[in-house]
Image (cartoon, rainbow, N blue to C red; front, top):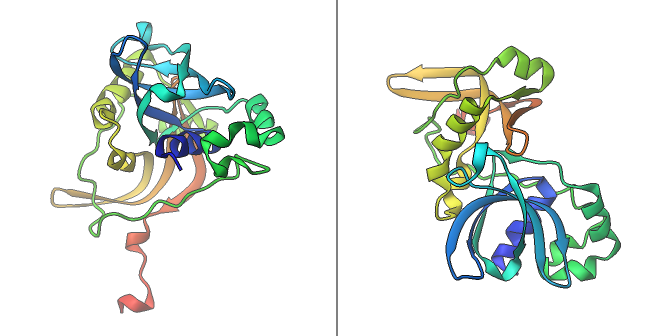
Length: 226
């Protein structure tokens, strides 16, 4: 399967933004983030919300239509989220053959029921790099399961992760957002033991938290470790 098509399919199933490099009609290559809102299957075009921190006025998204053939590279922005239009899901389910160029994985009765477990990539699970978004009220985030960022907070969050996604390097998908409730500081290393997953809704400039508590499995002790 075309790797770009696979990434776009995954983005629709998981409700994630995608970091892409794109060659426009003038031949210029640009980098930006997209959320897929609609697909025009016969023309192989996708209607998207597009975000580019450098060029977007007032840090807002714009709606545009892109050619699938113009996408050069694509990678999932793992900490992002958006609401996939139900109308798009219905059209894919009703006529999967029309969207077959996005891969056989789109031929499913419920494209939102797709989950993928990320592999542990590092034996020593300390945080090598991190930054904290200032001014976030954690109690509000936990109680309301969302927190509206102001423009300064949103710009800070995006600015500190933007460089990590330039060039659509897939390894950068390991970066994530989280709210830690249990951590260990040892020397200059911080080990995150318990946390909540947090997503960034780029369109709404909102942090959205998953209510389920998660634990770093690297710290689980089993009989094999004895």
